Image (tube, rainbow, N blue to C red; front, top):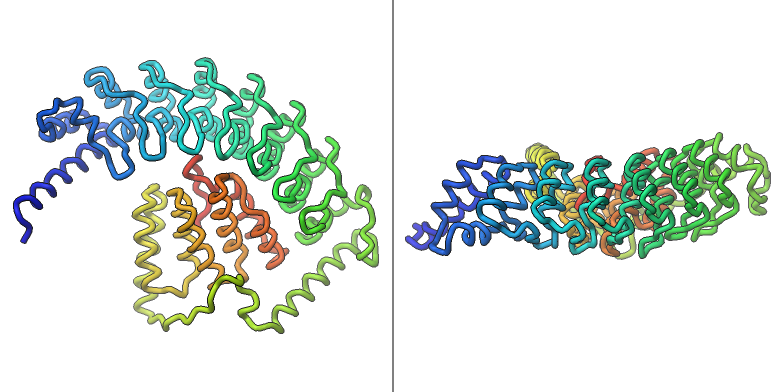
Length: 462
């Protein structure tokens, strides 16, 4: 039986949880009552300022994140708390409000002295988040406060965030305020590359009008390679009209026309054919000849794979797994745990989702999708190493699943501190596994959204 000290500690923890929940739900009366009970003699303001969760987020962070302006008003005007208090990730209440699109709350914080230039540990400011979700009102308000429109985060400038999420109006507003259309991340990603990866023709056209370079490359892939892979004929035409080089090769020596052919996209091949120099290794240099050649090469590769031991398809650094027999009852319980994980993910309770998927994996370690889903949750929590471990486990179980390659690429990219683009090697491995898979196209389109820790979309569930 727990002693008095343990019981007291448990009671305090419950009050702290109740207090922070009140901040989240905007229950101001409850928040005040619980705060008075928690006051240990230091004074109410000091007591409340010291109440933090495991990520060093206090009541002001939670109130701002949920758009509870009245709670923010009490904390700032009556208790005079620090409006720029930072959590473990270096994020201020303003950043939390901006990420969730709570415009009025963000403006209230700015009116009460919030510094809009403060960036998180990853360099993201409120302006990055406003650009990423397309909050034009807040974006313009922040710019009016003198925020640097070209401020760099580990995932690029606000313009890259806007382009990567297809936020046309946000991109337009940033360009109007002289955002650099050729800004680059450390991995050479530009706004134009992000717009193409997002499949946004309007953003692409605006960037080209602003002077964005079309012959750039990130990880060996040019905008034309990405467009050819997506299959967007209009984006391909737009790039070519702007001067994109159809003969550019990626790091594997592949031209965009072969990427389009690998997708079976005849229309894209027809557009690129008259502009692409002949590839000598292709015996019949016609549209049909190119498509037949790529199909033949793909079929030959798949036949070779079938002749080889199954383990030959696995990543070299992954051991062969001896999986236990899973009973129907265990599979049923694993499915229930997976469902709980999915529900928690939808609520953005990523820690709870991780716990649920872990339970599911313990019950059914043969299901690769469980590792894929848990890898995504780790990404959302910014835990790149854990995400990579799970992605590799997924690939070991399902070496022929393109999304497993994508998961590994996303984890590798986060490890390199740039969440808006998947690792190109992992991406092209996925293409080689199944050149006709629309699933991999969808997975690559998720690339600009793989950093949910920084943005806010949720399309990556298996």
